[in-house]
Image (cartoon, rainbow, N blue to C red; front, top):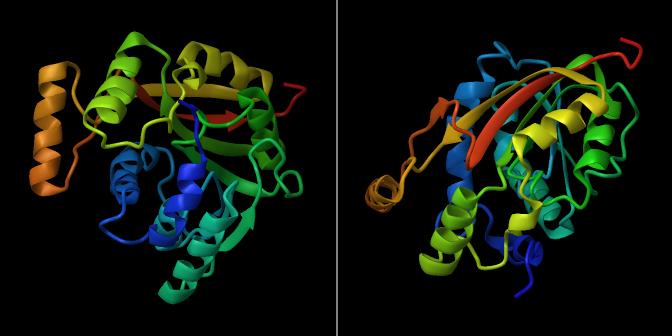
Length: 248
C-alpha cells in the first residue's frame, strides 16, 4: 500500500465543504487548536497570515472571519479551486495559490504569521519547508503549527486504529516514517532561524486505548471533540515559535 497518498485530497476537493464528506471532521479542529494559538495572538485583525497546506480552506476561512488578511497555498490545485469558490460564496477575500511548502511563491519578509496545521507530516522535506516559512515571515513573525510524533503510540492510534481498523481516516494517507519527533523539529526550527520554541501535547483522543475508544464513541454520538494541552507529546503536538535575525 502506498503511504502519504496525497491523491486523497484531490479526490475530496469537490466535497470539501459537504458536512458528510470524509474530510469534513478536520473543520472541527480549528476551534480546538486555536485555544492554544490564541494564547499568543490576542487579536488577528489586520495581520498578514499565510496558511501552508490550506486544503479546501478550513483554516483560511476561520482566520478571515476573525479579521486576518489571509493567503492560502496547497499542493492540490483541485483543493485550491474548491477553497476559492467557497470563499467567494461566503464573501471572504482570501488569496489562494497552488504550490508546495518547499517552494513558496512569495517575497521574503511578507507575513506576520504562518500557520501550518496537519501538514508537516506530509511534506517532502521538513527542513526545506521550514527554511521557506522562515524566509517569508517578517522578523519577529510567528510560526504556528501542529503535527504528529513518530512513536509506537502514534502508529497504534493513527495507522492501526484510525486507518486500518476503524477506517475513520483513509488507508495510506499517513506514512509513519514521515511523522516528526518534536526534538527533531526543534533542532530544525533553530537551524531555520527560529527561537523561543514552545511545544505542548495536543490531546484529542485520550492517553490510552480505552479512553480513545470512549472519545471516538462520544464523537460519533455528538460530532464534537475536546482538546487538552499538556506535556505529553507522544502522538499529537502543537507549537509556536518566532523568527529571529540570522545574525542573532
